Length: 118
Image 1 (spheres, rainbow, N blue to C red):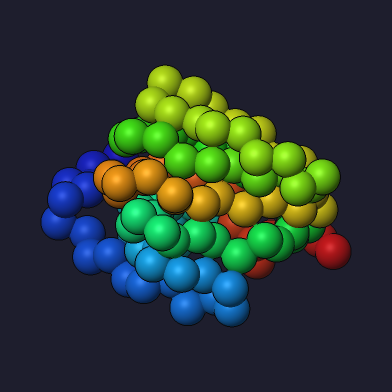
Image 2: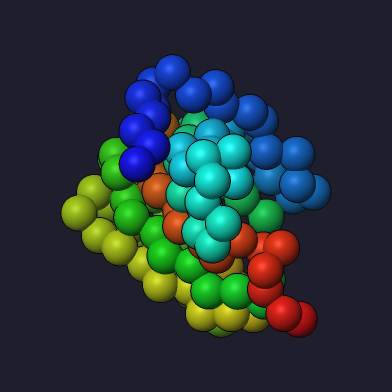
């Protein structure tokens, strides 16, 4: 068993093209000997967003703090808030945005992309 103290893990600015004011930290990952899944914590500052993107693996999102906007593959915006969870299918275009005044925080759990077959 591996137990991490989340507040001691350093956040890094997301460098993906199209990302704005997004930080991420890996709460559980390869360095913790988790070969199959990765748990990430995202913080989107007010006015920020992830890219509108897709990838070949599914993932689950749990909104941790405050509220934000989840944009689906049709470009429809959904307000999401604490207490809600989201499932994103493989190859489904999606984006998370924060037009609000407080940081929008969520957990994102994905399979290890190195083990995903294209």
